[in-house]
Image (cartoon, rainbow, N blue to C red):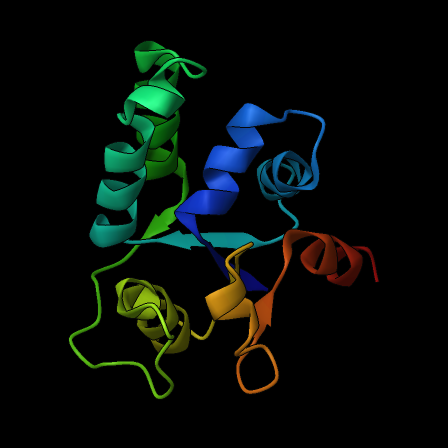
Length: 135
């Protein structure tokens, strides 16, 4: 299985090491699935981790180390040029849908705009991906 993790899932994993998003990262580290990322996804993650609200909870060095770990260890592919077949209500999320579609990967997110598309596309909440991985 291949999966794209929305930056909100990655950030949640850092904020709550005992939570489901962190369990997803541990499953990936253990080889349960292939993590797909792109330059846009990594840039959004870096940008979000620099927000003062997050910087107060995630030290700059930890944020940089996580982004570098993903750059080195995930399958980093080019961002697709084509738009997604289905758009989100939040156009800023469309690159994630396009990436997952182009790479034939599931998209994992806690974003309600993306989860609303789960009936049409392979989009999972973190808890649902963990169930799928354990089947």
